[in-house]
Image (cartoon, rainbow, N blue to C red):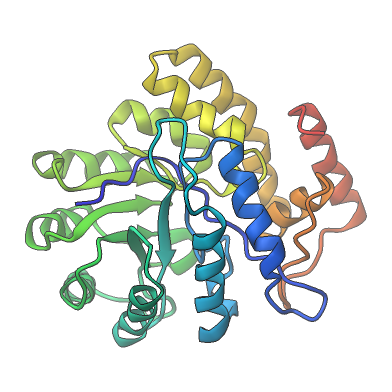
Length: 305
């Protein structure tokens, strides 16, 4: 069964001035990230504005990312991992998206966010993920992002699902709560042969690796792929000081994302770096001039420009 590892950026979705997906830019972005050290790609996460595209755009974008990195390998000589975001407010909506991923082919796993807007009980979340897992043979990575959904998967629920569903292969924890992540790891320790935890908060990657996470889905890896990859690569090579140095170097960029509605700062950073990816779709607005200048200085201080 597939095991997620390393640094997997939730790749941004570039849009043109008319708000249509810019597939040429998406392909170039995919290659750029891989050439700069990431270990996989994850289209249509929160950073990829999964909520903003049609089924037709979704399928074509998945094909674009897959084809762009076909035959490429990471620094460990392994094929680039591909994980597709399949997030929707209903169980049947998620299953429909998973079927589209299956039709596209070439993806290692799907990632499924907790439902938005609806406040579920833990029993409902358990049944949600169990039903989804039973609908497919694809590996499923659960995605917990309480700051965005106001819903959280309790560690005890994660442990139940890890034991009961063989193709649920892990969870991405974007809560920013290190105790929550630790509990995910502790309560699934006996399932580590097929279940892993991925960190989803960019400021905590080094700490998460020390706790036992297998890697991170890091939005800032869109902007600073080499820096983020160094956190993982140096850690597994035993260079803990170098890993921590890279983590400290990255932190100001992740903190700067609070200046705008997510993921506008990620896109604005790329535009400032000379990588045109357009803006987020309305109603998300561009940064104010003074915010853009603050962001530019962060990138200068990080020696990215």
